[in-house]
Image (cartoon, rainbow, N blue to C red; front, side):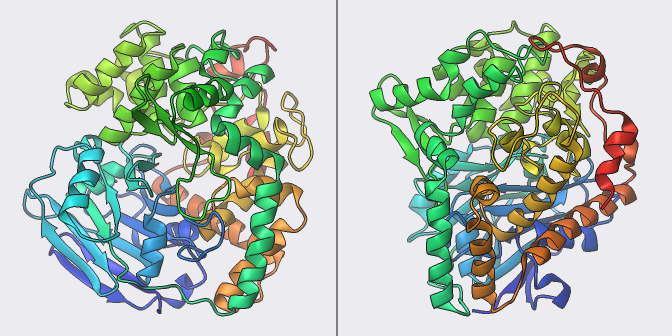
Length: 575
């Protein structure tokens, strides 16, 4: 099945299927979303206005049986950061889009009438329908209702109430294999989907399949690749304890941001740790291992049950648990799980919203440690769109501006995630220089700074950190283009067979002869394309900085600051 571009114009409610332009043919995932946004979106446009476009792109290996290849990239100009944005997630949508022959779906324009719509994508095109029943409903009700409304297996992409209200922390949610939710969480792309009045998208490939140019070589490469992932010790730890295995590790390093980034260790870390979570899941009959998308061999996701043995949440991630736990000083894992489920349902970024809660706690809106108060605000304020709810639902920066708080951990207005850049300096370079605002997944130096994967760069010193972040950001941009999970990077950094096997997979899929240098050049192209968009949108090197409190407030227990000069940070772009 030949790949095509599916285009949806919400202004005149028309759709079209187009051939893939030659310049786009070698791209997938983030590489394709950023290429399209850079080519077709006016950098200075309002992110919620008619000139922004929302782009969905499966990866180069999506739709195949390649291990861990089920990530979907969504791109646009971000209403949160004002920069170019790509956010990716698991679930079933990427595989199904690829099997439907969809190289990318581009949604443009705004409806003329005050109506809501749904989209249904098949290999034959996209159908636009008016939607009334599910407006104002949460993501779980959308998935449940559609499972009764539509026969057969299909994918769902949806927004909750946060997206409908165009809150700048709103995410786009993807149905996972068990009917749960996976989130394209960062950057407020759910608000862009809401601005275009699209409540949900269904995907039915009608039995379509992805063509493999050399099936035998593909199978051989996949065996090597999957084995490298399964055998790596970090993969095994993630499979046993989930990403939340990092709570105790990062706490020990002194880099666990606590009480709105005033401390590097959390006294209640054991109560929210991956080990505690693992034991609780086992005791309550949940699932310690769970895949967020078909074909995942790491299985770092899980199903977390409540005390009565009923499913409370799934995909309970370290960054979400840290933000609601250590950063807000909540020690009750059940309460954090409840908040996680609410945020999944209303469709809002668990990192941005939880960090915003920490800033609100510093402002005195509610006490640190008040997990019940957090859940109340989520249900009664954010989901209902009250004044307070809209402020917190617009992110940490909005809360800081509204309440006059100066310790606001954001870069380019996006909340800093679960690693303090004073104690883990490599990730600070990533936060500062990322084209998309503070985002640990852009260049995950934690692998080398803390986990000793691919060598060791001391997290407390400046030496080697810029180069480390640069190399990882280049590699990550390329990985994000394949549809692969970021966690393949652990094996790729350590196992000499892993990266060549990944390249062999791409070559066998498309009958190419790519080399390692080609993959590096792909990553460089993506970063430079994204940066050029941002410069045209009005950003410059002065925006590649951390908030000033990181430079002058020492972080216990190491009593360190982020001590890079602007000139040192700017050398990141010397490639």
